Length: 179
Image 1: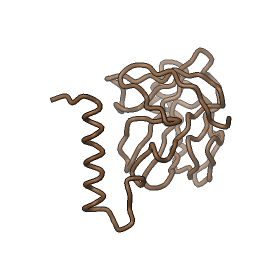
Image 2: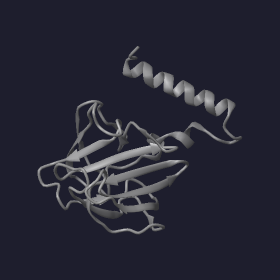
Image 3: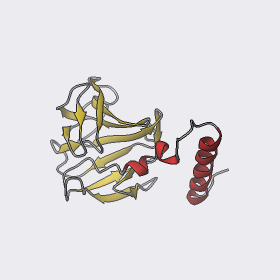
């Protein structure tokens, strides 16, 4: 049975509350599990307008592709402060050149199909730090940024600048990172 989006969110919030009240260690709160509470930022420079595209055949399903006409070579910024845990190049396969940043409390972000990578594993990055540039590497069919937010290793619905990305379709989003 397919649940309406609002009902699904209520059920998810109730499940998280139940988990925290029964299984979480003393002192844990819902904040520990939420990407929304981290206030993750759009991974682009201030004022840039991007199309955030989601689709039912995307892999993984809740990832987002950011596109615009002049995407190639645009700076990619870290969505929040954290530590770089992965800088990899899968060649012509899958993500191609990609980076993963760990933001703590099990929250990570992944940036893929990069033209360049300007960080190394172990680097500390701040919100808005340049980590690479948009490209078309791996299994990409054109310049764009493939982006994921994960909690505990599971890809979750993307929230940026407090804006929920529309599933499944397009969301126009203006970056406020560094403004």
